[in-house]
Image: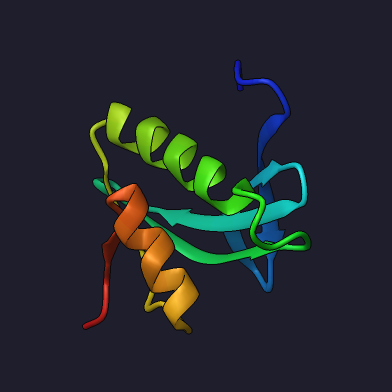
Length: 94
């Protein structure tokens, strides 16, 4: 990626091919299909510093720039829901 400190690579986890993104203390995994990209998980070792927010915004711009519908799996807590809302990330909740 062209953004400073943001990395993006393909990894295989439990037999699934996923996009792995990293920014500072934050790491996220995203699955992609023909016309979609879904955030599976995101974790920040240093919560409250904006690392997850910056990473989600970059991911959203990247995937939507490729014409994909970007969203996240069900938020597991209120903090994640607020980050989705702040970043304009659609929550796929069924």
